[in-house]
Image (cartoon, rainbow, N blue to C red; front, side, top):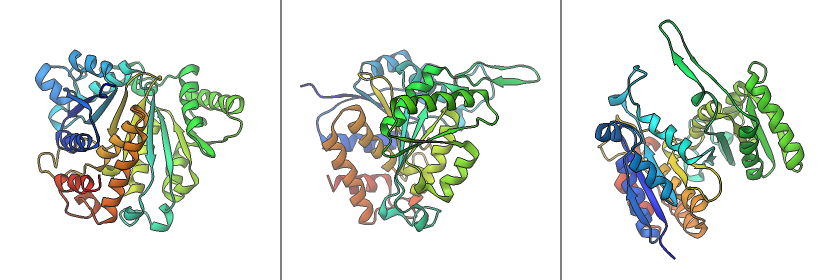
Length: 343
């Protein structure tokens, strides 16, 4: 059997540093065919576009894609005609048909005191944010005019049905569907479709609807009440970053973006490119390594390897590993070696 083919997309900022950590772990775990490609600002600098054709072709031919981070002030612009690093990521999600973003949030026992929330609030929290990834306002019609601008939020019944099924299949007891149905017509359609899918296809799973502003409050007031949080694209983007702080740092949260069976998934940490610390060797690689766990589990069906890596991460933290974002002083390399020591 041939080695799984993984495309690595280091991207920008701290991306190359945490990609090196992921490469070291993968080389320890088994035999993989690893190929690096350009995306984001690095691709703009080299090729003039954020998603070169060679990168897209390699990703489509891969078994899985592991992305670090894109973006940075170097490429910030208000010129709508200028390429932006984030356009490469959005285009890659669209081209690979990655409509379901999974962000597990489970504060590890060793890090309960690293969260800004009290230990008793987050202890035992174990939730999954399921975010629709290829629809909504990020992909709707938009235009910038002389004295106004607009972005259009649109959803079809089919788009809502398929992401709702992902959420219901992932649930142990309850799906909390997030919307703004008291104001938005797209949210009213969202609520109707999710209700029908739950009633007709998943009658054993409890369903509740929650307005997004209330959900933002409940995530910090009582996060243990949640099992699976289902949200459209923008709401899911915002709420999943809020939920990341339950773990103590954005540097701890991985994600998986999945499409139809048989297509390569995209796995990436939730944090950004952190240009303020790029090149200093102090970035926390654990969200990237957690993304490797999700890639092994959901992208390559290598559950044993995924469990080994997750265990190594948790044991390293139990033994005192702390990067700067977690209140410690461990460098990127020291954190990587601490995890490798348990593999």
